Length: 495
Image (cartoon, rainbow, N blue to C red; front, side, top):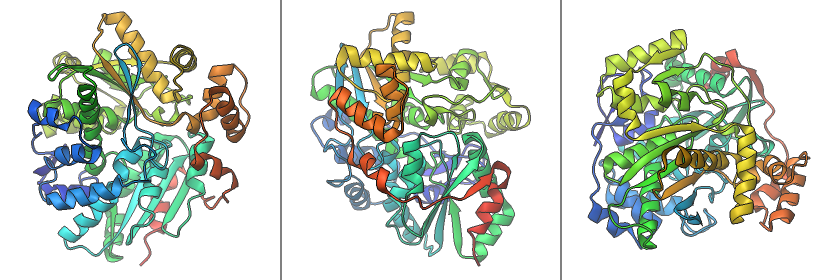
């Protein structure tokens, strides 16, 4: 399987796509063709382990990796003790025809662990396959969860460094502490005086800078990114869509071939894009329901076909979705315009120059065959947290609650009673203050007091990784302006 870029250019292998992260022309790597998985293969996944399901999906894409290499990488990523549930991505039944796919059982309590625990092994193998001994420096922009997941995943990986930029006022205190207490000389965490879009823009500009790339080559460094624009992040996320379906088959909640809905809280569009690839591969999916918060640039897009960042950036209770420029939407647009790289580039140029583009009614209609967009503001998010806990004794973080609310709205508007799976992207304890306030109406104190009170109120145990943060020393205090990210990146490339 070769990979091409959304903005035109030559083909690369799967291992090269993972190494490079982002194409030199700024495009995103996509598979040259989307492989298929038959219903019989899906049926055979029922009753098997997550690792076996992952192997079946990934072997379709990673053709320059041997079966043994894929299985070795999977056995490292999902080995006992890394995830606190042996099912890796357990499926919880909350209500009639409603299920929650819990993707937060990894070491950083967020769905980003699902792919990032696998990426170091695949990247190390990729370096060997491509005969490179360069040190890989990963530049990462995070809206909250990706940063720590990258730092955790690569902490013991030789010949790598991670430089993480996060928005100063755009993450929860738990998310921030997870990052700024990270140990190790290869970890660098920088607070950006700006929002996530500022951080993401700066990282992309640094990766596209010829001067920086030249300096990196002279220093025997390869610059890459572990953000979701890297195909190595996208492909492992396809797996848990198949896994959820296999679990429903296992429980006889559906029959083979029955279509289901997935409801995905998303800001950068990578998580739900993986569901699109799963559907295109043959997974029976009726609707992919895209759930946004008050920064509802995506739900507006699926209503009008117009993508516009000409709006205020709003900080919400679901900060990992506080994004106006959804990078991975580019991959969907590439498919909607029949892989016309020139047209795709025109749209991206319009976005950069004017902050808006319009895909037209015909392409919007094609998108709506698969997607539905909705959003929930903070008040609805809080109400959803409380409503779900009162009805089902199930505790959701604010991002998952956005999806819960949007699903209820979708069902009320459409009458669709198709079995639906909500993707739960983070532990409620990463946002304990917001969750406790939603349940009790009390103003939250610091996150650790809130976590203890939340545990008393719900009977749920505070994760050890959250408890331990309170006593860890703060090791990263560097701050940079949003227009100084390129200069900051240059400082990490030492000749």
